[in-house]
Length: 407
Image (cartoon, rainbow, N blue to C red):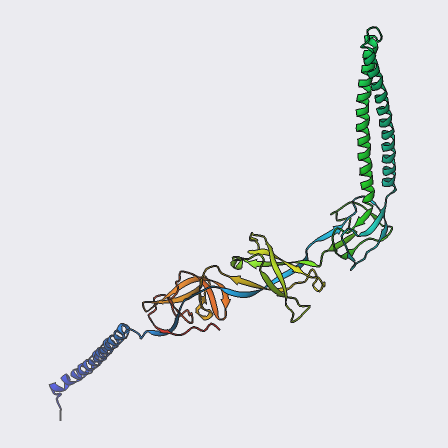
């Protein structure tokens, strides 16, 4: 039996393929619609998150304080002799005798060394001979002047009688007296010059006796008897005979930083310590200041007078000076934690109208935990107790005032 294919059998196969394709397309469209719906929903949530404002940060704050700076800072200093001299001879000669050595205390005018220079002694003897000769000539000239003056006076008196003295004889006597007078003046000047030369020779001879220029102590001795010394003061090849320092009165030199140079009061007492005497405090009096800032170190040298009658302190010591710092006018202070530092500047965070502002400042003295600041600030303005990079300019904050601790 022959079975004829039914027409419906031929149509069903393509219809099943179309249904599967439509189902796949419908699934794809449904998935896309679902994803799109999910995306729209997420966008709405993200947009809502953006539009919602975060809660303001709570920041501890305190007001900027105004007060007078009054503190002590530690500065290094150096003790120097009040007077110091390297002793050189004024004339060349051999050391005949030297009566001091390193550590010897001397008094002003005390004989400390004697030199030998025969040529200077000979110059003095020659000058003395010249003075003696000039004196004799002056005396002889004055005697001749007196005699010729007397003769002229007698002839002048006799000439009043007519015919006794001729005019020529009287004129000759007058000119002789005038010549003697001029010669006497010249001899007087020659004598004065000879005396001046003698005084110079005597002074030169006195240079052979070397005396101490002031009260002090010999800190260095470079020569011994028999050494040849000369007047080459300051020459590297010519060392000094001795070095003498005044130690009963010392200079304490301290370099005061520029920021603390204002308000230096001459006559004020300043305490200092030295490593050689742990636990002891010494004092000096502010006596001199350079009144000029050293451009290399940005400091001003200040000298203090230190009396050292017992010679406990020594020149060359490096004391620690407790330098008083005073401001003539009140300045602004904030806690040290309120000062932040960046690569560009130091700053504080000012809280104004609920927003943070960074204000550049320069720091000064430190009293307790407070730091002196200079910048665009006013007393009473609120600043963050702890400066932080998170508190960027414009950040919305809620101020929480706290009390300051200056200890």
